[in-house]
Image (cartoon, rainbow over all chains, first blue to last red; front, side, top):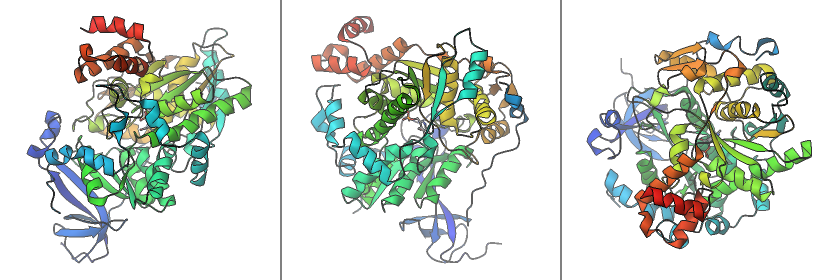
Amino acid sequence: MNAEVKAGTWVEIEKMILSSDQRAPQVPEDTRKTPYIMRVAGFLTSDAKIGDEVKIKTLIGRELNGTLKVVRPHYEHSFGETVEELLNIGLGGKA
Amino acid sequence: MNMDTSYQAVMARKNEIMKSSMGIDYDIYRQGEIAFDYERMMNDCGFSLEDIIRIQAETKVGNTPLFELRNLTEAVRKISAPGKGARIFLKDEAANASGSFKARRASISAYVAAQKGYKGVIAATSGNYGAAVASQAAQRNLKCIIVQEVFDSKGIGQPEIVEKGRKCEAFGAEVIKLSVGPELFYYLLLTLEETGFFNASLYTPFGIKGVESLGNEIALQVRAMTGKDPDAVVVTHAGGGNLTGTARGLIGAGCNAKIVACSVDLSGLHMASDNDFNRKSFTTGHTGFGVPFATWPDRVDVPRNAARSLRYMDDYVLVKQGEVFYITELLAKMEGIERGPAGNTSVTGAVALAREMDQDQIIVVQETEYTGAGKHHNSQLAFARNMGIEVRRGNPEEGVNGKSIVIPENLSQVKGMQQNMEKLRQSYLRNAAKHCPPERWSDTDRHFIAADVKKDLQWLERQIETLS
Ligand SMILES: Cc1ncc(COP(=O)(O)O)c(C=O)c1O
């Protein structure tokens, strides 16, 4: 279901900045195969649905356009799954 | 106003955009095909060390503690030859606003931007510098945009870079997150042009001057604590500003310590490659930046780079990813402090060097940085494992970048590897020759080049013969 997202919601937009054939001449082969993409978060300026072309107002009040991708984006980076190889390093003051 | 925003058109407007976004006219320093008046450029920004210290104190920068790492020093002595094992000191730069020495670098730019009446500042960086600019901008009531390389074509971002983006947003900055590629610079130019904001580049005289206070503090603190000067200062090295500023500060304080660069060895991985982007466990302080920037500093977002590391570098030691992770864990368990990856790179270099130095000598690690979710050795290793990289204990030299990370089994396996300085200098000369062939180097060019690699004219003349 693609519900309406209310104006003022914290969202993330995505925009293609350069298509793969517009990229800088010095980029390596693997990178050249991919377009140059931008993502920015901000407050949605009017009601819209995911996938719509929208306008956002960023934290400094600048207006940017792009495709609405994520509603209320958040960070979930963590300390990662335990790497057991680290645990016994330095125990008992021994290096 | 509808300007052409294609890659080629924007790059062609580079010089005008730079001039209006910084108020520095670099042309006036030009002295030849290669030479420019470096010292005059540094002096013209008009700040004395006292000014820098005062400005930085206004925004929670500087005056960070220096600690002696007694337990680590003891551990190093146990594995060293009799009489060897220098005293290791650590400058706790994580105590700066934003959690790294980069606050020093951002502080003067933000001050200048505010003084000159710019409405905001922009920096292109995926590192701590973004958080530093955002933090300084917040305190000077400036708007801030950080342009960051964050994710690969699958949309995946390194945990450390993701964390650094989060921190910029926490300070109220607009964060432009981009996929892998050198077009970051293009997008920076475009945004500078659109907004008329100040370019808080990492490589202006303001940025480097801001780091001189760090070198000065080290000299004064080591003298106060030990009654002596340090013998060596180890600097985590990437773009070269950390080393240049610190060395200039030390020299200004009359301290002749050996300046040792230290980077994580990431040889074999390409920096602009979408495939390799998430196969490295370090986002800065590595050879992917350290070597190219040392051997040709003028590859940056300003016409002439104020960070000229070979001018000040005496030695350059490389460490393996696995070695740094081992030392990071040891720092927590032995010294009771958790710190982030870039500073710990130098701690690793210092351990390797201290083993060869006498016990009455002093070696200083000149920075730490903050740590936390994403910016942590466990996050990095867990992420690497998910990317299919093998993680195990063993001889760190067996680690193959992009394929495996081998964490030492004991401290005696932490050895580092000295780079050949002569080769680095020759590589600088080859880059200079590409820029302008040696037969066209004037006397001024020759003086400049010799100074830029910390050598004399006789050395240069001999090298030129073998170059051609
Ligand atoms: C904490 C920290 N240490 C060291 C460095 C390396 O500094 P430089 O790029 O000036 O060589 C960086 C820069 O990326 C950093 O953020």
